[in-house]
Every structure is written in C-alpha cells, then in structure tokens.
Amino acid sequence: MAVIMDGKALAQKIRLEEKEKVEKLNQKGIYPKLAVIMVGEDKASKVYVKNKSKACTEVGISYEEFLLPENTTMEELLQTIEMLNKREDVHGILLQSPIPKHLDILTAFESIDFRKDVDGFHPINIGRLALNRQTFISCTPHGVMRLLEEYHVEIAGANVVIVGRSNIVGKPLAQCMLNKDATVTICHSKTKDLKELTKKADIIVMAIGKANFLTADMIKPNAVVIDVGINRLDTGKLVGDVNFPEVSQKASYITPVPGGVGPMTIAMLIHNVVVASKYLNGIE
Image (tube, rainbow, N blue to C red; front, side, top):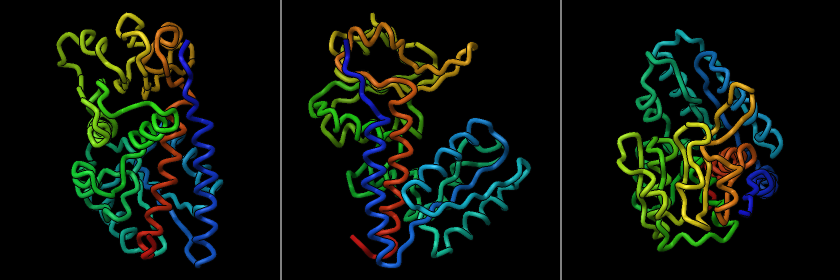
C-alpha cells in the first residue's frame, strides 16, 4: 500500500510559515496584496477564487477582486491589468482562467508586470525557469515539487513521465524536473504506446483531466504517482486522473484527490505573493 502524500497538511504548514513572514513585513509597514481578475461567470472559477480569497485572509494578505462581465473587450481587460500594474499597493496580479473565448489569454498574461506575475505565466518568468534562475514558478508545478521534496522523493536521475502538456502544468513542471536533474518524457494525446512509457517511469504525473485514466497495469511496482486531475463524476464524487483504489496498492507514494495537489496550488500562490511583496519593496 502506497504512502498517501498529504497535500492538505503540507499546505497548512506552508501557510503558517507564510503568515509569520507577512507579520514581519507588516512590522516594516509592508502589507502584501493580491488582486484577482475574473472575467465571466465560470462556476469552477468562482469556487477557486473563493478558496484563494479565504487562504489570503487566513495568512493576512489583503485581497481585492475585479469581476468583469462576460462581454468585456480585450481593451477593457488590458486597461484593468495596466491599472493594477501601476498600483503600488498591489504586489500580485492573478488572471483567473479560463476567460471567455473572444479574449486572448496569452496577450493578457504578457501584459501583467512580470514582477507581479504570481501565477508564473509571463514569458520572462517562463524563460527564467528554463534558465534555472530565480523566478515565479506556476503554482501547481511548484506545489508538486514541494510535495516531492517533503516526502524525500529522489528526483535526480529519475525517469519522470508527465501525461499532459499544458502551459499551466505539463510544460513548467517538465522544466522544474529538468532543473532537478530528472530525465523527463512529456506525453499527450498524440503519444504512441503511452502504457510502455508510463510502465518505465519512476515518477508519473497525471494532468489530462480524464477520470480514473491511469490504472495499476500502467505503472511499475513502487512508482511515485502524482495526480493533478480533478474530475467530477455523474454521482457528484470528485476523482483524479488516477484510479486511486488499484494504483495505490502498487505505487510507493501517491497523492489523493481531493487533498493532494489542490491545496498545494493555493499554498504556493500565497508563497509567491509574499515573495513579490518583498521583491517590490527591495527586500531579499
């Protein structure tokens, strides 16, 4: 039976650490603040935004929401971002995705001041990650790396297979793994013989959004399995991309859904906001 990697407990520990840092910044007259922009009425986004708001309040980070209507133009969105770029009391800017299809999310990400880009999606921050320089790392990949570190999973020299090539998870996570000396394979919908690749992996990360996709016959004994997927079944139950009951019998470590990577994503966002507030105020 695999060791279950408790993202909820680790996230709580990180929040307490960040709360102490916020209190020290407050003593210097610095009050970290996150601004979140949400365009439209996406139900899942509303839940995520609420959770981020709650986490910020818990650690003492100020929080401001900018809720824009579905019919917001690109010009209006960029004006909102520019206004927040200029505001000195705002240290982190987060554009909640998805945004309506008529808007260009990459242009929007690029218009955020990279020093306030706490989601790690600005080309400068992505480039710095590729060069293994100090930067903002996307919150989910960052959370995955912290979980592996907490459970002392050896990354250097490991065969890592990431299933999913999104800009939010797959690509930045591959870079994080490379920076830690792993041998990385990224798989996606066009990959041939996926099972042959996953069966050779020491660490498998699932991030494709297909419920219970990874089964026990697709992994080797004692593989480490990280499940980034969140899928709601017709029954209303939340499950990941991994068939947890059977894979957990064969893996050495595994993340649950919920309670694994999800809480870590928000914890790393908090971490990034604190880092941004220090950086923008000239504190190392």
